[in-house]
Image 1 (tube, rainbow, N blue to C red):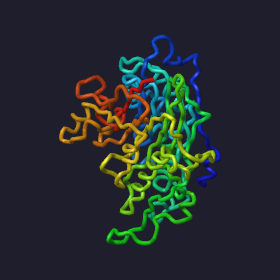
Image 2: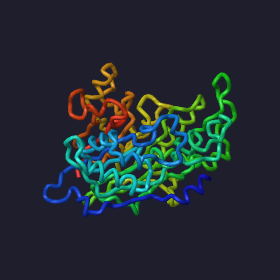
Image 3: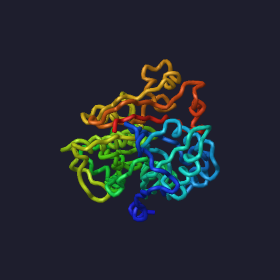
Image 4: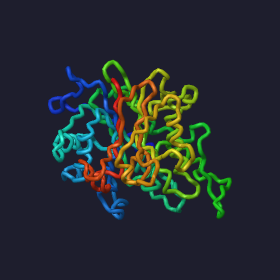
Length: 402
């Protein structure tokens, strides 16, 4: 199926859970003075449920069937959310699905049910939209001589459309009619973009570009998507900037994924920078970025850590941005996991990196922050043991003064 033809059938999905079942949170006399905003890569895609040999045979997500099974790993994800109790949370690696068989089921059968003695949690508002992962391309993107469509030849690595998707859950109204998505923004349209080249036997670049002009005429920058979803918190509007850039790995000496990761992160850096945002256009053709007087929180697994990555300085584009306040959430569990690593208190992944971020604009007041990573024998620590228990990532949260 052609790339553009596929997109004709996909539009964003935003919905409100009926209030007859889910009560609206954050109302009444005891309304908290802070809101807790979080990001969590929940590893709820086929690769956490099926064998590597089964994955290439898929043409759709197995998650709806998995959700019907009361799956232990998904119960673990729900328990973490019930323990941390974010008011707003981005879930990375939650397959893009019809809400009736996806996030609605997750809410009703997992979050609304006490997990391991924790209080159930309710989110009246949710937002999801299509992603590029698993969307077939007609090209041999990895130059192995085969046009396989999916896998590494998809527009974003994935075995079926919607794999590694995203969902936002919120106790506060999401202004879906004002949301902006950048799924279709073409990589070639970013001025000064990185260009991977074919390498010679000495791993030096030749004059031949890795991706042909024909490929680049269709190649989206975002491996999943980039979203700007406004949320109404009292009289204030906060823009939730959500993404999940490609890992700077699983390529070759041409460093194509490392370059794409850098430029995916750059998209949000430019989005926040008046004068650098003029080239950007969203999926409705609206140009430009976020005005200087708007509040925001950047959320997501950026697959990049300061001081390391496929291209130097990738995540620093956000961490060092003048509009961003990086409060560096931390945990004792990360320190215990890697006692000989001087940055382990900041780690957000079991593989000893800080890659998941909640980055508020500098006008927002942060009261507290953390990474949910209990030390051994603390409540919830059993969920940290392996990816099949919950995730190989940790939930990161901030408390922001309303």
